[in-house]
Image (cartoon, rainbow, N blue to C red):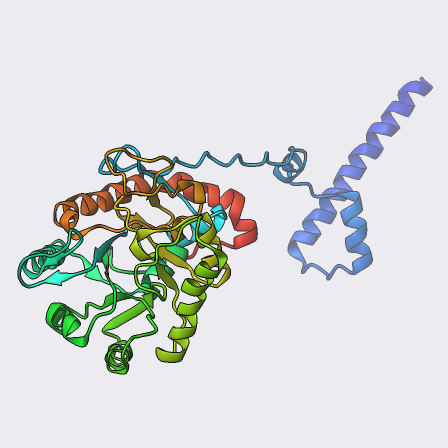
Length: 384
């Protein structure tokens, strides 16, 4: 009996509590809500914590696994090169290379430079194997223009090769070796300068017996911007090699710097190797003296940003070509086209640029992903 009474009381109190709570809730719904002070707010928070299940579950997840950078593509290979001539990359900093390559303000991938080597230009019979007559020279230049090439100077070329600074997608660097009078440049190149703004580079030997008149003519051409003089030693015909003495190497390299400073008021950035001769010791000496480019007489192909064809061994079919691969300094052993080869090579140079551009685009996503994972933390985001 007592147990039944206790149960009845318990039920009564529960019903009373529910009715009281209902009354309180209905009063709150019909009356303005009073401000909750900080103490009350904290009490409510502690008593009835609000938990977002999604956040709670997410906080228990393990950290995201590090991204694995993709493998970078192999260096582009051109089907137009001799099998013994293979392209070499010369930049050690991969991240810097990729940032310069894909920066939209820089030269587009596949930008190619054809380096043309000229010596004697004749209006009649060609008197040397390395010469060219004016008609053939005109054909070469006209064909270059028709296929979309534009001439650049040495400073533009260096900026492109080192940092991929924008130049025309198809560029040509025209270099004529040796001392020449104004008449030579006016007759053979002036029309291209006047009509198209094409400069010509001159490999200038600072021979001690050079007349004041010849110096002054070339100084005027240099100041005009038409002729870009670069160093080609001091004594005409001196071919440098690993067998050259320190005195001869210093005379040719340092002597050019002195003469250029005194006469042209400039420091040459390129050394056109006299008679095509070079070697490990001359190249290292040139670098120590501040030269940044060197041009051989080897016709191996065109060049692109971080892409220069070189050879590691002698070729019996081309015995005059000195292997430059072992020197491991592509920018100081750059190839040039002889005029007798240039006309037939223009199509291949243009096609090389086109194929290199397609190869770059095919690998763009992988290179940008690599940059984003490996390079971005240090080098910043890729410019847009």
